[in-house]
Image 1: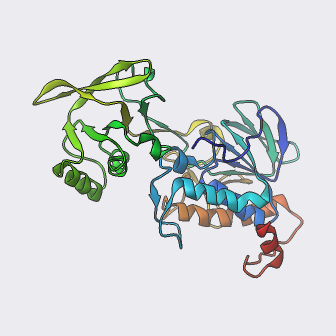
Image 2: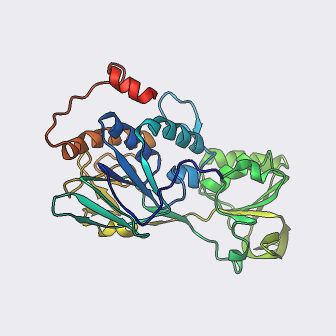
Image 3: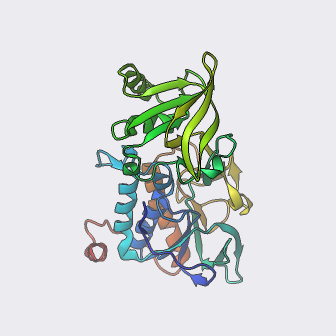
Length: 351
């Protein structure tokens, strides 16, 4: 996506709010809505340049099938609809910034500082950072940096940009198979390269891929990528080596490399929270961590029976919001109303 989804707050200043949300993926965005229903304002911090998290960064056009009452929705569509839903609550976004430290002020509030010098104070922190900061693993190919962003890519952000391209897709997991299946109808040619004949992807995807190979609609090469040919950022061929055919070139003008992701928990590991296998232990009443006033929802939250589903994160966001209310408004009693029966809430959401 090229256009801005939200306006970014310029870094380096000091701010105050009710809740600091670390992570602007779908669960972090829905938390803004649940907090807003209770009159709680939020600011979000995210290392990416746009909201949406993994849904936008890695799977913007991949169908998501587990959102209640929605048969199918892409990561990009889900992000846009969540942003539209939270628009009345005027959340502020600190994008392209990483939360690097937390400290408690003398009055008991929390201060979060980012790597760009932004400081935000609030009585509550909510960590909604997925599994941390995910970065694609670069293939061990000499000179690949010279082609990145021009003709070598690690994610598909706009499907139409690959229309008419001669594409080599490298990898054997779900992402490689998903985009082989999704792009073969619009690309000039698709060549899938994997170092072995077995694949790690869903069996259904593997079966569909092999059917396309048998029908002559895509090519499959069991080979190891050895190098790239081209100049000025434009790839002309991928050099591969197979057991049976030795070294040879695959002409192409685009390569999509899906070699998995590297998860970096980053500075969150230093926040003084109880960690279990790089996830944060929470209670299941309000999703508060071992540190009072710091909550965790989404994939990073750990508790018995945890399912890493977006819909689970939405449920966690609702309960977290009720827990946060008592820190934000310690002298008020929470009187929760269903949005279908609360006229004031309906008017606020409709604005």
